[in-house]
Image (cartoon, rainbow, N blue to C red; front, side, top):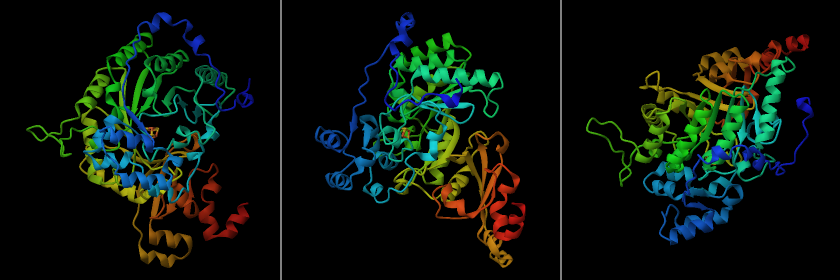
Length: 481
Ligand code: SF4
């Protein structure tokens, strides 16, 4: 069946084939143990009140809880956190700011219901296919919810995104790859990687997780990524039973690499804090790490088929500090975690309460690179509909150049921003750039769309220069048309 003739499945009508998936694996399941975790997840405001009454960490005052109820923050995203993370929040302002709802989230709900138009890239429910990598929604929750969550539409069910059916996605991947091999599909590469996402795959049981890993490996994938913040929210999840399952998977599929895409937002989530919330160091001044996170990281790193990569947004009042970003990159690398991306906060509904302006975030990230070695550095990027756009530079302007006049004079006087298409679904536009006149207030790429001088996202050369040509010499543009 051609891919564009796939039947449309209504969200929530996921075929239930779990029994069939597992029928032939009973002998394998006997080797997978489950742990009954008690994450003590506090969800929504009434549960917070009860949690505090019962002696839990009082991260909110009564007055704050009243204000949250009046503002109706739960309509956007109910507050949710593990007992472990709330205890940590008592010793860390950054952690507190990440997990605590703010009434001002409701002041301006401007933003995208479906960030970066992801549904456009969803050929079957629960799967996004943009690159040689597929993203798969495997679960609709995390053990805690970041207030800036860029998947909040999925967690709360506001868009029609659904969790994936293992059979549907593996059928799709195998069908797509067969059509690439047969040259029926020529504009997209074979799927080699999958990212298990959601929500957080690490809240699934070991057997559920194994089902996805095993099915994707059997479909011929080379790399399976697991996108997770569980090392910060509940590191005890990485226990012996989990590693037993992971080792069983490796025994069956020794050629498949597992990449843990971890999500640490601030060093307080993985460095050791004393009761006063200060970092603890050894006699040589080296930072010590939170023992639970350290144990999880060490066990992951000890497996040669595993890599660890960190990615996180830069968020107001959480990690918008160059020194914090620098320390994070240094110490993550020392813990064996690669610094993959720092992201601009996505243009989700309510993003104005969390987002740092694009150019400010770039400057913080650029400053944080000073004093880092080559292996500790990272990129700052926006994850847009056109792919990962790395913000490579923001130039100063020179007022004398305003005399040139027009759009060009204005751009040279005020300075420009230069994005690079680091990762894009369009083969012919890889590493092309986008140049736009500066906008220090912009919170997303949309803040530059009316200032573009050169647009490498466009396909034709004439289109790329159209905005500047239209401003400088509209008669040339008309002649070209
Ligand atoms: S861990 Fe990721 S998916 Fe989960 S709440 Fe945070 S940002 Fe959202």
